[in-house]
Image (cartoon, rainbow, N blue to C red):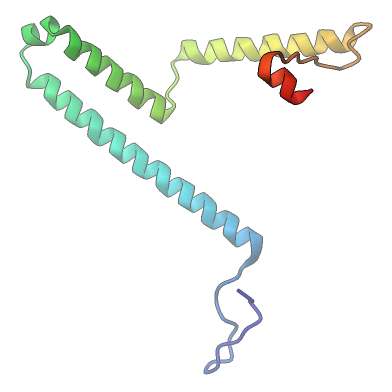
Length: 130
């Protein structure tokens, strides 16, 4: 929409347009709204799951292996959707990043490295990349 168009009655510039900055803000707001909805849905699912667990006799719950697996799978799915990481997960991720940095730095210091990271692709991927 052209932002130079004026409204006939008031002579003011018509709303709309706004350029890239406005669309980025709108995009961030939309992403934030989607994330909030996702968190609300996950909270509701978690509430229902907890309600079901609380309304089930402990002996029945423990004896039903498929039920326990389903509960664990549901919790794991919610954790994945919400991108929840334990301290152990975060420490493991930091260790992998440190190892990658060390590999890149040692490659940059070596005679043949010269700051290069070599990636080898095989199979169909290697054929495609040629």
